Length: 135
Picture 1 (tube, rainbow, N blue to C red):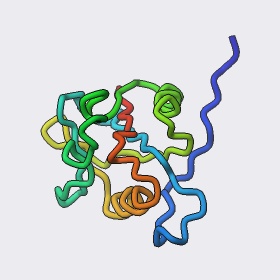
Picture 2: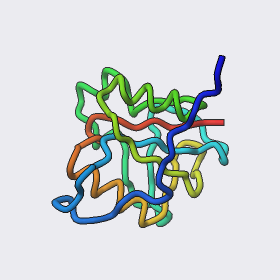
Picture 3: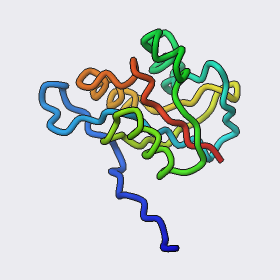
């Protein structure tokens, strides 16, 4: 068996007005491996000021019933594969900046802005095209 290659992922997602984004991200891989994060019925993504970026209220009810608040895995390639089964072929990759109460991942303000901007183009949050990468 050969080694699995991890695609090169830009350090920071592109932040531009939605109308100017040429290749929008259509999913989110959130790396929480550096923290004591636990999968739960309600996992949220917050800014470092505890503003909600993603929670169940942002998900279309039929998607929420089908797959919950996204997916969980321990490998970036598995995260990409899972998102592809949900129709996301260009996910953004973000490392969490912290975890609150074991179930809420925190991102910085720039990353929250990038998530918001790309979501305006592809609506991936409403489709729960979010995968948390765990330890």
